[in-house]
Image (cartoon, rainbow, N blue to C red; front, side, top):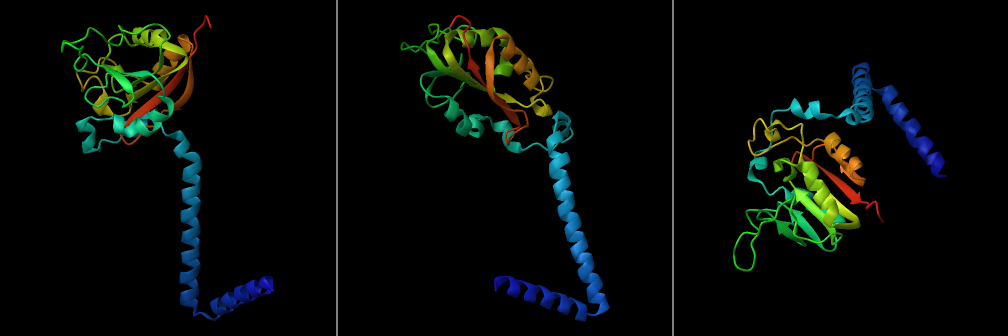
Length: 228
């Protein structure tokens, strides 16, 4: 019965179309044609263009959001970071807004009980070997003059299968380039980070190479100690 009703409605629409004046028939056909063309264009764009997003797409865009100048990048990655950063951990370069469940290591914000600055940084962490569950770092790695040495120090203090979570400025945004920011000592790229991870036997468990709302990308690694 439903099928009969469906066919009846379809024939009714065809009959109405045939009874239309020629001008309205042409308008209707044009409307259908351009509607199909729009959806076909959208479909092809989804298949062929979105898979080819690269750094040049971002470099060619000069309109950067004003909020990039105000810091606090952690709020853009926090929902993902808290999934991986569980247990006892550290935030390297957390500044005034470190990860909630992490001990902050930042030369400008790390003090001892006497109120004196602690001599601790990314290549000199005051923690025992194999003692931490995770290390998180947001927009700090590009400020380090010895990033590879820092990663080795991260691995030293992490437990086997411990997590390294790096949130980094996307190289496609010219605002982040070291030529424009004197405090950026080098330019992290996904390929550079992956190369260092591979050399140190750090397994990549998540990566996002396309820029997010903060024009940044993240890489999550799991440490494997060779002697375990």
